[in-house]
Length: 209
Image (cartoon, rainbow, N blue to C red; front, side, top):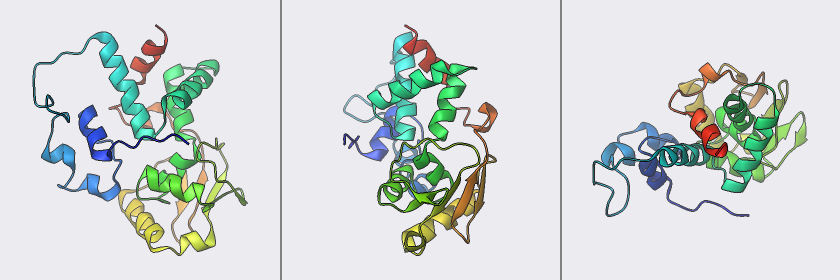
């Protein structure tokens, strides 16, 4: 399976903002974006570089891909599915991304980062409606019950991730019980509940060219 093996902190610096790919490190002063707030590479510190309209759209698409850890081909498939649904394509796109099992597992605190939550899913550590699902891209539906497998719940890394998530708080569209390692995907998030730093309209413009 193809993966993006670029260093996580380098990806954040390339986009010029925190993408929260390294778990708790992103919330400390050790974050690379805090220490080196410029793009990576020998020309990263040069200022005055202006992007074209296409370049701005491309950067926004790359940023969303990196946030959710999705490669280009898979992202295009999700966009096509969002375009076929009723409503705003951009909002549909973000809702489909948030409805993926690996994203929900991360939001519920089953992993300290999206990459770790994805690993928990792949290693048969998550149940959906009582059945094991090891596909990170599995599309959850409102009302689905997502919980940790008993052995996974006892792991120290999982306990630390749950505690950290509880300290930050959970999104409105999820109902999580920390003690039982169980949660309910109540509904797809509304656009106002998602980060305002994401401009999904640019992605729609990019794929509409």
